[in-house]
Image (cartoon, rainbow, N blue to C red; front, side, top):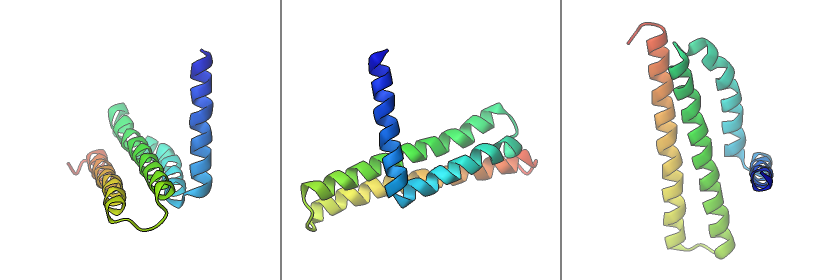
Length: 117
């Protein structure tokens, strides 16, 4: 139990730090907060609600990993390095893919809710 409490404290510390210092994380947290409420009205059922919020939680997780990769890369070599640039771009592309998936899930959920699909 002690390890679980410790892991939770470290996770919340990391989340608090990234919210305070990373604009993208802050924007995604605000989006998640709004989506939690909005999803209650837009989801046509519990499964859709879980999908709509779940995809945003996965997006946040990938954004946090992208932030960690960028921070670690900058720490390892602060000067520009082409190979590290490719790594950072790939991590950013992962976030972009999740943004597209999030959009797709929300659009389809809304279309289903209003009987358009």
